[in-house]
Image (cartoon, rainbow, N blue to C red; front, side):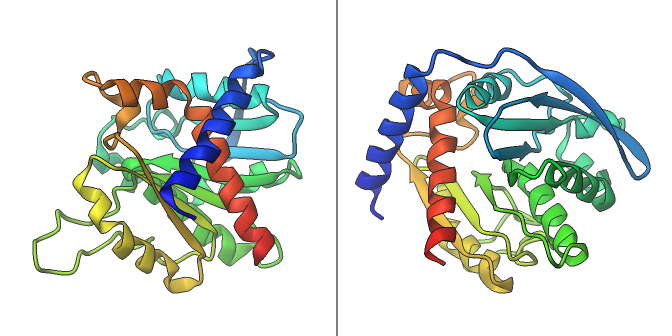
Amino acid sequence: MNLKSFINILVIAIVTSISNTNLALAKDIKSIDAGDTEIEIRIFPASGNVLLLGFPCDEGKSIAEEKTARSLAGDGIEVWMPDMLSGFMLPKVRSSLSNITTEALTSLINEATKTGKKVYLIASGPDTELVLRGASNWESLKQNTSLSGAILMFPRLFKETPVPGKAPEYQDAVGKTKLPILLLEGERTPNRWGINSLSHELQKNGSPVISKIIPNVRGYFFKRQDANRSEDVVTSQMAGLIKVSLFYLQENNTHD
């Protein structure tokens, strides 16, 4: 499907989201035993059959993410946001991600699947490595149960800064899962040119991968202090963007 069709579906989802004024205001806090530590989860409950398990490594301080979660819950999509950094007493730096254990990630995924809902994983930037690592390990342990998919927003999965003319080296978790994946990247970031290479790597173990470019935005657009008008608009309607992404993943599973 081309970019124009993607934008049209996004507009429809945004209008639907705006028209739904019955947004969920409740937020539950749940702690689970995740191996060596306890992880606190912010839960935005909903009555629908879809659960979105996110990995925002933000020490529980996210603003845009919580606003999006409330909007999604109002539309029937339950959202879980585990506080991984606080659980492991880690600072908010990229190097902390390697200290988050695979066992803890797997425990969280397992807990989400116990709800009986269709579980999708989501993360952005370097945190997308947690999604891939947790999913691949969970798949190896749960042969008869499957996750529904994952949304990777502007993933940053290089081991090191790519060198021009040389093939990039990705994190070990890339290409280890069979999970259906949707990649989202900003049109105004150099990383958009590497999306085909990343898609190819992610497909190596059988993952069906869909990639989409978000027009007129940069990576990390919803965290920027210098956001332009397009970035402000997309940030305010992040729930619509996620709903479109879920639509694509569901359509892909139906066609398979």
